Structure formats: structure tokens, C-alpha cells
Length: 123
Image (tube, rainbow, N blue to C red; front, side, top):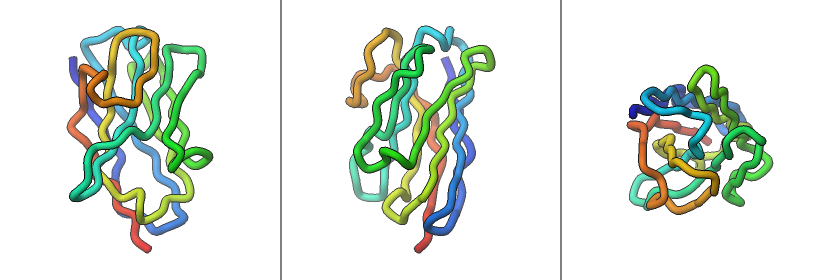
């Protein structure tokens, strides 16, 4: 199983940015997919996750209304659209996957991880 996150970059506050996570080696439709992030000097934290195919999702309060997660099972891809970015969103963003039907916010529940992509938001 491989997950490859991409799309990070340097943007100004208030801007938008889209991340992608390409997967291989798994039947994506049977996995909960999630994004986590880790800022310098901080622990990795849950951002948002999406269920199999019914559109169900869960997100951290800090990104509600600004970040949107989506998936394309046929293309083995997951996406994160980030709007109204703020400096506090600066972090390395990781995509993660877990088999099953329940969404969890704990990183310990996720079995597979991508390598991370850096997002930097300047003020």
C-alpha cells in the first residue's frame, strides 16, 4: 500500500490551495481516508476524514467551513480543498487510510500514511 500526498506550497493568508493523495495497493472504496497535519514543534493533529462513498465526513473545528475533503474511488485519489488559509494552517499535511466503516480522529487508528506535503501560509 502506498499513499502519495502532493500539492503543498507557499501561499498568502486568505488564499486557497488544493492537496491530492494518490493511492495504490488498496481498494480505496473500502477505506476511510483522512488528512492530518503537523506544525513545527507540535503533535500531529486530525484535520478531516471522509467515509467510503456516502459523503459522510468529520472535521476538526478549526477547519470547519474552510476545508473540504473529497474522494474519487475510481481514480484511487483523495483531495483536500483548503480555502481562507491562515498562518496557523502552516504544517506538513499527511494523508492516511484505514480499513473499515467508522471515522476516527485518532492517528493511532490509521494504518497507512503518505509522506506529507508542506503547506506554508504567510501573513
